[in-house]
Image (cartoon, rainbow, N blue to C red; front, side, top):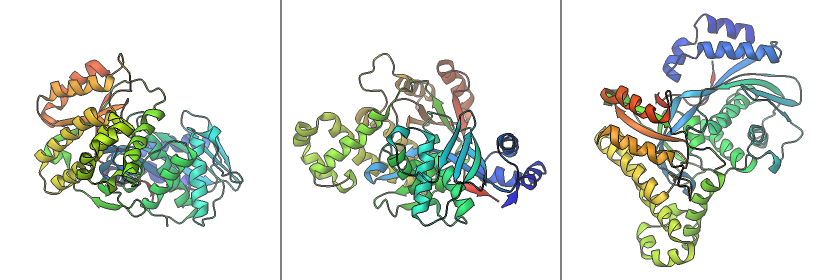
Length: 422
């Protein structure tokens, strides 16, 4: 580690510029300099500090497959949460996230608390508790964070924050011995147990590992991770994440219903997750499953069984550089999410169907080219589109006439996941 003044001087001199451009697909110098300025306004500038970054992620394939131990194709993007952090010689952790009050965590109280559900302090507490369980001596520290990961965008700002905290702990107290895969698992634990939100492991894994990755969660304790060469620009396409402007009321129950219904179908076959159920067996038992669990559970299980196969085929298509086949599979994924998984609109909503409207506009403006689908958890948030570069300007302009200027975001796949910057 280096003292704050030295790190600041190195940033000013441009020491990290090449690293930022290659690893983050953006020059983060000014953002880190502003972060340090704000850190010094609140905390002591004495002692050694670390700089940390954790990216948002985009789900490329495998919509709601991870929590059933399925396969996903995901990538980290060039939007991230960054931090400057240093030990404070106290028994308290203080993290100031730009725009929010300081979270203060006593190291003497690391038990889950339902009253803390949905709060960033819960994530911090959960991550610290797991690091201590791994045998690391965690001490008090101060950190200032700033994020340009779009809230409610399906880019998973919560997972990025979990990975950020994991890397702060890893850099300050674990000599960076905890692997990216393990940090992702700790983040999932913190979100499930401390934050109170059921989720799979894809978000944390994509943010922590970085780049474009195919992940097979058949054994979630030892997921199979494969890096995929994914150069969109070389193929003549851009990745657009479109903020639909949907109402972001509490959607926890909507999200929780998906794994709950899938799990109910799996339990019918005396299995823990749908990954362990064969499609032929499932199809044969649909009449009985309908009576027991209802039609939506049947459709969601069917989505999983097809989507899990599709995610594998998408990765294979990219490895073979068959981008046309990849785009076809992405569109099939989008149709399946809309028709079978049913995570485009909130149940019973009539007046508010923003995601569906944006999907219709993508169909219109892409005119048979590229691909598009609901992005991430669904119900609100964003749509993902792969847009030919020669159509990008017109596509963005036309979409933003409905969703608003600046709400169609053109992104890059970032090759580096959560990291302590050296």
